Image (cartoon, rainbow, N blue to C red; front, side, top):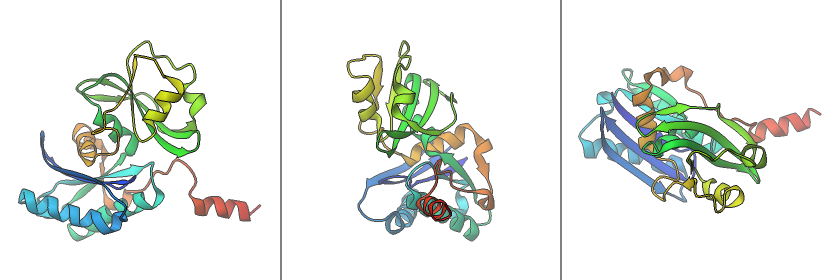
Length: 230
């Protein structure tokens, strides 16, 4: 498959293009601009510099959450719009935590994706890697850091990845030589990893009308409504 990846789930805006087993193009920018300002120009740049048109792409893979509420909606909206404009284009919504695990696919052992949700609370996904493929161990969840990591079994190697990886390492595993944090190039979201996830599991491919965000926790509007209904 020729897969276009788009990640707007955090501070990083990232676009990639995978053709079979070759990553043809990838760019990630930690930006202060809104994703709506930068992501479509990056898609245009990716296509122009690889010589493709949108009609040449089989699937647009997008981070479907968890992550920034606004960022996720921008990414999902962009992909839905591309599919509307190009009827042959399929799409795939990929767990942000699964994609983060693919950042570290060459690692052999347990990979824990951790993204900060609120103080002392993280989005957590656990995976196992044999250095060639990723297998999910637990469902994505939002949880108190202590409940997940206090007493965690580190008898086998553990890799932490995501924007809360270093905090978790220092808080719960300082001095534990069997727990690692991803390097600077891999610790945050990368669109190329969305492409790898879809290339490995094409059951993720769906239609634009079925593409939706997975927040894992209530949005501010939902919380405000629940409070006003009391």
